[in-house]
Length: 253
Ligand SMILES: [Zn+2]
Image (cartoon, rainbow, N blue to C red):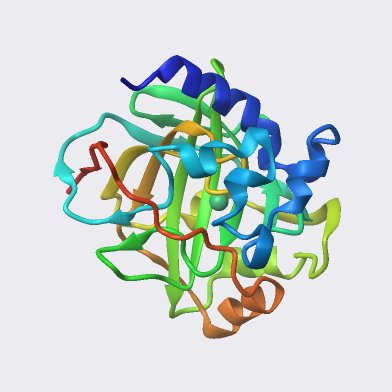
């Protein structure tokens, strides 16, 4: 039996770990993991007691998005604001922290946008296809539940919003810096709003479950130069695909 309440407690406790440099207490364990070698994804579950879900969890992310069950999982809408870019390189990704005031309605519930960050290559795959980049917009409800919106990014036209972010992204690990650049992250959502929906986890330690995932089917585009610029900082920040196990994968459209 799935214990949703304990999953939610884990997710709430894990919120600080989404931003390892912001969490002085958890920094020791948070800094140890990596994407390859002895501290890579296969070892995450053994690196710290609080990382156990990375190996023992049965509702983990990412997954192969295919054969979803047709459904209408409720309202999905955004009220994001244009905001100054507060950006950091936390050693695992480029992350933009968001001030209070940007919200999303996901499955009829209100969530605040906390931060967004990127993975190269994409973590989810779409019917076996992997993309160059994946954007994760991380949200939290008043009750502490986490919801992440995923957007694939593929090679194509240059992306002006990404360009604004890329021009201030730190190549080396560094604390949050305030920049004079402003963007509205809703410009990073694809025009076609069909998506996959499932319950999963954080894709980095502590891999806490109870995270509501929404991943759009349509990728957005970035130029080859933009994709290369990110890959030069992070060669691989993608967790291997996890089994669906006894979960339902819903799909719209
Ligand atoms: Zn992520």
